[in-house]
Length: 280
Image (cartoon, rainbow, N blue to C red; front, side):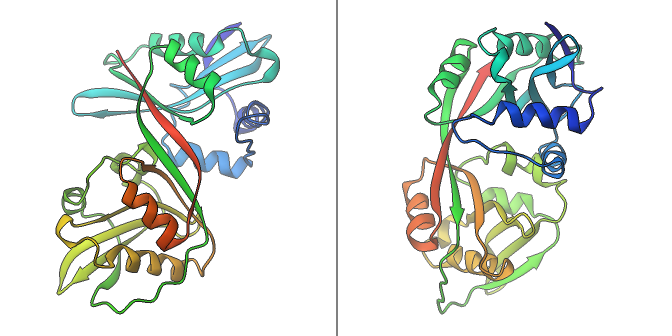
């Protein structure tokens, strides 16, 4: 078995192995070429930092990787690991991680990060054996939003760009990789909805109207439980013409958020993930 980066491969080569690897996954899914290209771009995957396991020149397994520097730490994010069924049980994931950590870089790696579906015990145990620990639980929601009409003095405005200093002051928790500032600041075609009361910013929501994905929502700590989040979701529902939306990797620390999304908005927590980290 030979280990190399994926920089020399074309999208079709990666796609076929990706789909075969996930065909019997705990939540089976299949990507088109366009969806894989979009994933690589949106999640800032670096194929020159991504590992491939090759046998007789054929790709048998992969780790798609992205990286960022935050607070002086170099973080490598695992955006997807796959091994085709016939090549499992050979320790390829460990060997691919060893390969990634051996790649020459200006700085050493400080943190490895990934998400794994709750209930996928073999994968969780394998990552724990590699030194990863569960740091939090993330909830993934999907579905059609309830039509909610509520009298309110909240005004919703579509904006371009992000007022990160103000937005971050509303946060209770850090978003996951896919909804992080690092990812969103360069993502194309997102919309930012800002909620105002008497010309004061009291909440916001960031989503992608074409993909129908919500990435962030937050309300000022002093203005919660006043229907502001409901008005923001109502604006999204109007923007997607009532079609189903996804809101992935919501931190499970807030039970009230889960109840709001399920009972008020009508979304279903269809799957959950553990965010895992390995500190080096």
